[in-house]
Amino acid sequence: MKEEVYRRIRERAGTLSRAQKKIAAWIENHPDAAPFLTTAKLAEKAGVAEATVVRFAVALGYSGYTEMQRSLQDDMRERVTTVERLDLADNLYPEESRVAYEVLSDDVNNLQQTMSRLDGKSFADAVNRISAAGKIRVVAFRSSHALGYFLTFYLHLILQNTELIDNSDTMFERLSALTEDDLLIGIGFPRYTHRTVQALQFARSQGVPTLGITDSPESPLARETNVCLYAASRLPSYVDSFTAPLSLVNGLLTAVGSNIKNQASQRLARMENLWEREGIYYPDRG
Image 1 (tube, rainbow, N blue to C red):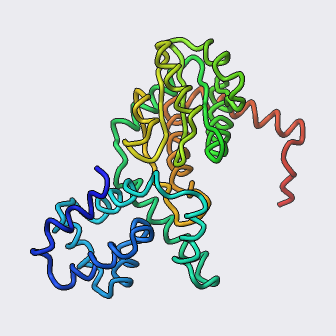
Image 2 (cartoon, rainbow, N blue to C red):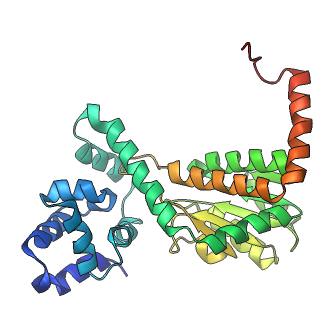
Image 3 (tube, rainbow, N blue to C red):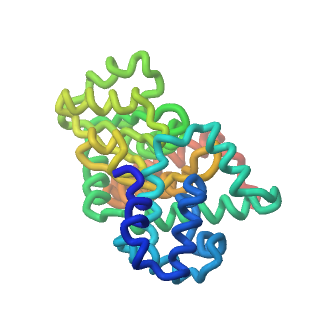
């Protein structure tokens, strides 16, 4: 539901403490900045103790600050354009010397959110599907392309069955070769690309299993996948934060490698011999 946090604030205004009302006022006066703040940062902005921020979230009926923050982020997901995010960065990071520290802190927050939301059963299901698939195709367009390339590179290294679909013009032709024994992995974060959603829809219509990597259960990718993994990617900047999504991909790759350890070890041993023979990597001179 849109503006869920603001609705709860209005409904519970009479029961909030004086300090909690200060938090509510700051959030309502800064709707574009509030979704990105850590508990410590919001406490600093509102002039209250950090524990008060957590109690405020619970007073609104949330399990904790992370759930409330996710609700704030969901509210603004579709309405903030790239240009608006650039203006937001200027407002939230007024001092150039603090930008790197602030962005790193926000990435830490994204990692913490991702860890708190990780579903162990879904993760294990994703690992098993990847390990057992006959052919794997990865769809990841625009900024998500970097994540798709990274995932494809390492999966193909150990499985030898993974390809990245990077041309939307021939996407459907390449997807049409997949069967129920294969797997399509779709990666997408706001702002979601229509082609990625179309690829997942097409695959499902053909009976091909689908795996999604995205930011939220409300993502259009989540509705088109058999199993979906979520990673926080919000950053008050014109660029997306892929720190947490990349860490989640690293976790998948490591788990798949462990799941097929003998096969992966034999494959990597052959590759090491090839790389050494062909001088692929710059020699280590000790």
